[in-house]
Image (cartoon, rainbow, N blue to C red):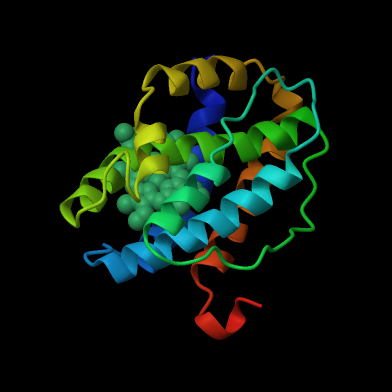
Length: 182
Ligand code: HEM
């Protein structure tokens, strides 16, 4: 069995959602656009980090960064968006690993996003703390994949569904317009 079989299935299964997310987020070529991105990222991350609060036996510990994104939002001179709660449940190791795939995987794109954010004047100490943190540990992804690939095959479908659920939640939050933030 190829070492990254589940990861490949996760990537294939979620790539259309990832592409839609890229389109919705856009290039954030201005501080205003980046600020909107940071506020929505906080909203998404906080909802997910709350939903994933309980300890479990998945073998992986999420790096919680919602608090860092809140600092970024404050650096940018605004406040975080109202909290949103998700009804999604991540109550099994398979579902948690599917969600972790999306959250940990977003660190791969963070290197690119950090370069864009730096081009408009933010950095690891101002406004882009969370991107710098995500980009700081390239070995973390490899460690995560080792845990992911230990999931028994009969649980893969559950992980795939949870990853799609997580991407769909992200897409709905990043697609929100100002009057939907309540
Ligand atoms: C404009 C916004 C985004 C861009 C430009 C972007 C870009 C990228 C890039 C370039 C990679 C591949 C990096 C590599 O292989 O070294 C990647 C991977 C990934 N990103 Fe994003 N990303 C964005 C937003 C997001 C968001 C908001 C999420 C999650 C909510 C996310 C989840 C993922 C995941 C799970 C992977 C890993 C895919 C795999 O298995 O290889 N991305 N992203």
